[in-house]
Length: 124
Image (cartoon, rainbow, N blue to C red; front, side):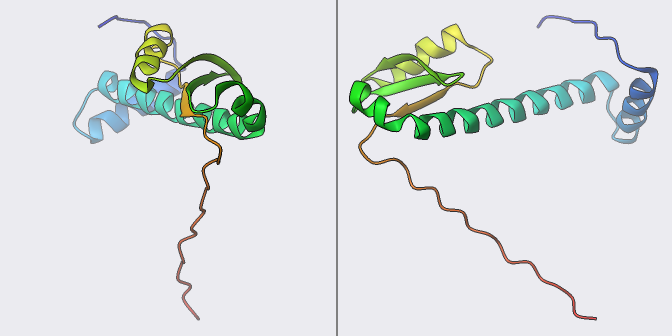
């Protein structure tokens, strides 16, 4: 594991130490968890943007990559293969910490269903 020194505002450090203390952990552990969570969230948002690009480009992708798996990064196809696992391994080697969309180019695009959960309102 690599060690990095980060410069943080004193108020941030103080708040981090207080929360860590109340949770029975260290500021280092808490900061590590927070940064990992942030990076995961960023990767998920990037994948959502790549998914939008995939749908926007679907017809062009279908003409060139029908039936194949593609890897999309920053709105561009960076690699393709008929073997999803081989593609995944190559992409992870090139981009180990970056969200890259890997998806099969099929005739039909995936349907996305949005299901809203009901919420209760208390009558007064």
